Length: 202
Image (tube, rainbow, N blue to C red; front, side, top):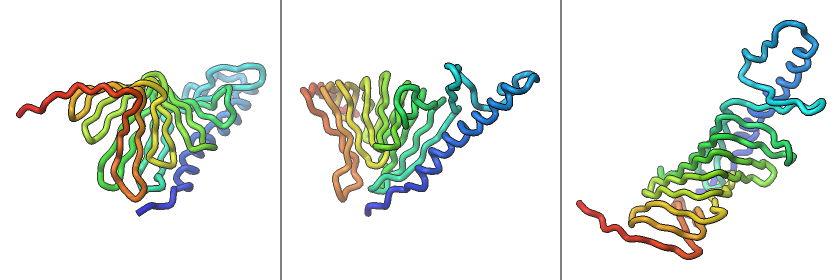
């Protein structure tokens, strides 16, 4: 049964990122006026650089948690996250780990060196070499993956390759979907699929 997407959970997750940044801005003002030794080394936030009057902040180990429209749980963790210097309303993250767990227990894990998340369109783009692992036995890699934060829906931005239950495969594109009214995860490969079948041995 479809569930209403948890806006409250998403709001709390983003406040955990944004509120510490606001606090850091206030603390930075105090530190600039103080002649004592810099106490910022004792808090889990850092000012990476200052360009004019604008400081670029980052938050350590942020966590995003929410529920999709089909009731699947989505969690995302990163080593650090920061506001994008180029795109308003975008958060850039390093060392992102994400997990999607369906009601039936099936799941997909995603890892990437970098990611960009935009709350305005409920999307995250994982970049720099993405690893996809599914509970159905697939381990795949692709250079970039665009995934929804509101639905179980993702698409590679280029070629994908890896191993699956039937053997090794390569494809021009891959989509992760959940059919309407179903809790099943579907992996759809297109764009010239090359499968090398490896018979199972006991």
